[in-house]
Amino acid sequence: MRVVTGVVGNDIHVVANRLIEISLKERGFEVFNLGVNTYLEEFIDAVIETDADLLLISSLNGEAEGWSRDLLFLKSRYDLDGVIFAIGGNLSVGEATQEELVPKYKAYGFDLVFHQVDLNEGLDSIEEALKTNQKVEA
Ligand code: B12
Image (cartoon, rainbow, N blue to C red; front, top):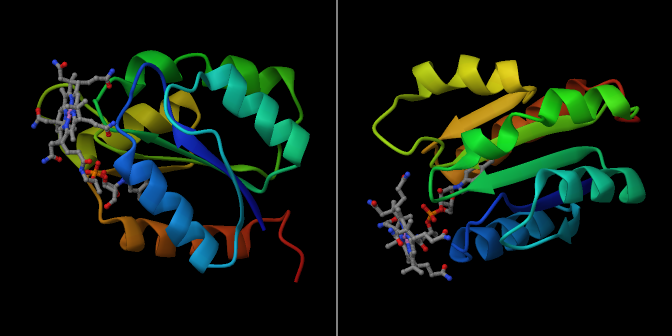
């Protein structure tokens, strides 16, 4: 299972990104880690080039909303059916709850949204979603 990951926008918080790479590798994923300061277009390019099953974006400084708005447009330009789009970390600049943020980010085109959710809990949900995804071969 291939995954592209990284931290979106002008966000330099690197610790979570390193932990996510290690955790994904431990779970058996082939990881393409684009690191911090990554733009949405770069994520999409990498997903296409690696034929990834999963795009896992982090945002730690809370500015992901501004960087996510083009996702639906980019998804409409390329054949990305079967790729799961997940985002997690701190997904709001001010106070906000998971319940408030999930519909917002789903409307931007993400399938799975984890605002201040424990990493392992989130990765368990992602693996569960990948199992039922059509692209996954039995
Ligand atoms: C260290 C740190 C910095 C360092 C970063 C050094 C580096 N190169 O990494 C420095 C000092 C440079 C910094 C700068 C800034 N920071 Co800072 N920083 C922190 C701090 C203290 C710790 C972050 C950290 O490493 N945590 C340890 C890791 C392991 O935890 P984590 O980042 O939370 O990641 C976990 C989860 O988020 C989750 N997760 C992450 N991604 C995903 C994805 C999925 C799918 C899932 C399921 C889970 C998940 O799992 C991760 C691992 O457990 C936090 C406060 C805090 N106590 O968390 C603030 C914090 C993240 N910073 C913050 C801010 C605002 C900034 C600045 C904008 C401050 C400023 N005005 O300049 C700048 C941003 C600069 C930029 N361009 O991004 C805010 C973000 C606010 C928000 N919206 O939530 C925080 C929360 C502080 C605060 N309470 O205000 N920061």
